[in-house]
Length: 225
Image 1 (cartoon, helix red, strand yellow):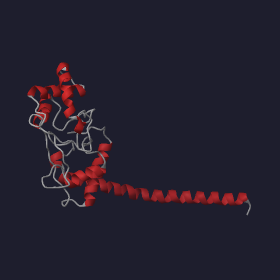
Image 2 (image 1 turned 120 degrees about the horizontal axis):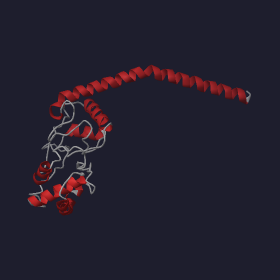
Image 3 (image 1 turned 30 degrees about the vertical axis):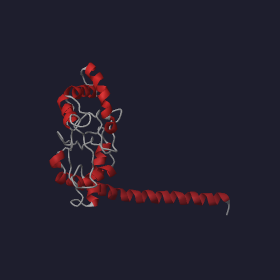
Image 4 (image 1 turned 60 degrees about the vertical axis):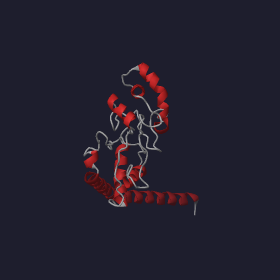
């Protein structure tokens, strides 16, 4: 067979294959879109039933309750990480696989900060957050920030391996006022979230996790304590 004829046949076959593939793809697009819509509807129903009472219908949480609308990333923003949190909860007594780690009370732990030292560290955090503050106190407080680095990072942007939140996030779970920051440092924080394994099946946990991760992916990173 002459080379040009063979080449023409190959070209024609490829064109027919591409045309067939496009037709199959077009036929499946409505099916895929419908399946995606059903998945989103299922995720929203799961959220309303099991999560909204704490995190709010708008997913924005409140004082002491994480914002799930696009911010919570203390342990990461991936669907896998979120599923782990949903499955095993946060700081659940007697639950071996639960998320651990707490914000210690720096007035009573090994640091034994005085009230003045806590206030100075607060001023330093406000300075990092580019909020007005006492520059002289912030300079004194900077030295004590070394107590915070292991969990929050040298740049204060968090450490997802231990659930250390980003302290520069636009919104903080317990607030970013002087009083709220003082209480967080002095008294510590140790919020909890129940484990849903056994109450939700694996498919529903994955559906809900993908849904929440998708919402976070559309928002700037702003992990919270």
